[in-house]
Image (cartoon, rainbow, N blue to C red):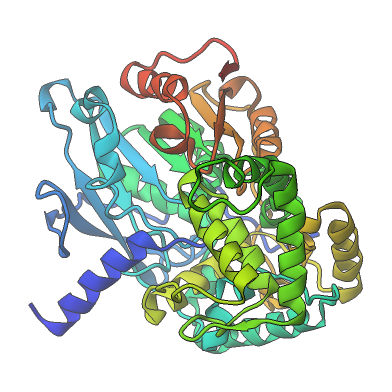
Length: 501
């Protein structure tokens, strides 16, 4: 295997395991859904995938798409795609696209991974399709060349200073945006959710499918919603799992703000677990004591961080603890990570530094996230507006300390959006099923209800009495899983919204 192929193979594997979850217009003429980039793409040429640990049935191919759909005859970029063909060709219905989260996530290896958790009847009747979205390796990739310290998750998320100041956040935004301008090239200007939806339609055509089904998760729900809005009659069975608020005035700003309520919905579950007798990671005798303990620890670490060799940053400070809290609430299976860090901080120690993905992968994922979040909608540039919002947020939601209303690098993004955000409506076939946990730190139920409202008659929603991000076949329950599986396998969908208790 050549060095280039080895590098490509590593990028495929690494991009598949890394995602960044967090995401008024000076608009040029919008690109419409009919701007599909010129002639219909030819059939894909499938070959064996590079990498290890893949299902031997998985095949890979490359699709050329326009970098700029307003200039379909201009430069082209590559999109890496994968598939596992339907297991019963005689009963094949079509293709099921696995839309990843992020922005910055990949589903390239998902046909071999989570796709194999799908019921046999679904796998019998659908090709499972994965892809690396534009900008993400091994598709034509982007890189901002950010400073190492700016790749820390607690820096990518805009946590204010301990006193609530956002001065450093604004300076960081300018530094990171400048790096993206210097190093991101032309492609970073063309990363957007609408362009990802257009790429998906090019992929649909290349697959030879008149209509395509999809399972979108997290940010992938917004991608799926935008695709269903731009190309409504190209959709078959659409499942959107852990749903983003589609507010066209705010887009990713609404997703970031949603963490306030997401933490409030989910933290009580952690507190009950962390106070349970017999739990080896117990941090308090009563659930009611866990929240004040966390707030005291964060404040103590704000004043006196603990050195943490090998970590980025190289100290355990209050914002690192807060970021660990946010990450750990994504799934009950991650609760021990936060509890153990809290116990270590109480003793004035730290656990071993968490292992980070390779820096090249982090750079790529961060650049894709920046491009999409900042190109989808214009963010305010006024520092005073962020200061005001952060102060309100800190008072109302102390666990998140103002971060959800603070300035990301988009506050200094120099490129105006090239088109208005897509407004999700009820126009189109009634073939969308939303599935949503009641307690989801990243995409709270409040935001999912707004997507449900926007879709109107096109959708029904299954609300699941469960905790964690990603519901279907992950952190949901048997009732929710069975409802989604039935829809994908047979097309049978509840007649109206239901709750799975």
